[in-house]
Length: 355
Ligand SMILES: *Cc1c(COP(=O)(O)O)cnc(C)c1O
Image (cartoon, rainbow, N blue to C red; front, side, top):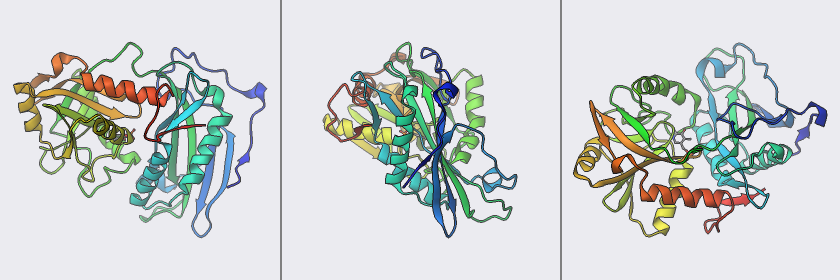
C-alpha cells in the first residue's frame, strides 16, 4: 500500500500541549490517516493529511443508522527513547470482527497497522514523555454513502487520529466506586455488545450519568435477560478475586473482548494463579463481599490498564471491597503490564513491538 503524504511545513505545526495537563482525548496531533472504500473497487486512496474537518453528505449512513466502529490503542515513549506499541495486531483483528458484525468491509490488518506506524513515526513529537502518559491512537470507520434506505452502505471512510493523553493515575491508584444498575442494560446476547461500535456508547450514557449524579464513578452492567449475571463495568472488563481464584465473566457475545482482559488472564496463568472465565451472578459477588471471600475487584482496559474497585453499590447497599484499598493482585498486574508497555521489563509473550 502506497500512502500519499501531504505534510505541513514545520512553521505550520501546532505547539505541543502542556505535558502535565494532557487529560484524555482533548488534544489532537498535526496529521491524520484516511482511506476510502467503494464497493467494487475496495479500499483505495490511502493518505496522510493535515488534521482537518471531514465533509459528509447529510444523508451519510453513519449519521442515521450508526454504521460506525472504532479501536483504541496507545504508543508509549520509553526511557530508552524508543516508541512502543502493545498488542497492536490484536486491535486490528478486533476491528475486523467489529466490521464484520456491523456489515462493514474488512481491512487488511497488516496494511492498516503499517499505516498507523507510519503516522505515529511522522507524529513522534506528539508521543509524550513521562510514566503513564502516551499517544492514544483512534482508528475508526464510518459509512459515508448518501442513502436513506436501511441496508449496509457501499462507501466507507477509514481514519486514524492521534491524541496525547495524560497519566490515568497522576496521584497514584484511586479505587473507584461502582454503581450496579439493574434498571438499564448495555447489550443483549445476539446484539452488538461484542463489537466496538458507536451506538453501544450512546446506549450507556444514561446509566453512567445517573450513577455520576449519585457520586459513583462507573456502572456495572448486568445481563439484559435476567439482570443477574455480571457483564462488564463502564468501558472496561471486570475481574474478581474470589478466595485465591481470579474470576471474570466468560465472553458471551454481549461483552467486549478486551485485549487487556486477555493479557490479565495470560499473566495470571503464568504466575500460577487459578483463573476462571464463567458466568458470575451479582448475588454470588454480594455474598462473597459479605463473607470476606471477595478479596479484590478491578476493571481492565487500555485507558486505565487496571482500575481497582473500592466498593460496589447494589439495591441500596454499599459493599466495600478490600477496605476500599487497591488489592495486591491489581497492583502487581498494573506494574507488570505498564513495565512491559514502557519497555522496562522483558516481554515473554511477544506483545510489545518497537516502532
Ligand atoms: C474497549 C473496551 C474494553 C476494553 O478493551 P481493551 O482492549 O482492554 O482496551 C472493554 N469494554 C468496552 C465496552 C470497551 O469498549
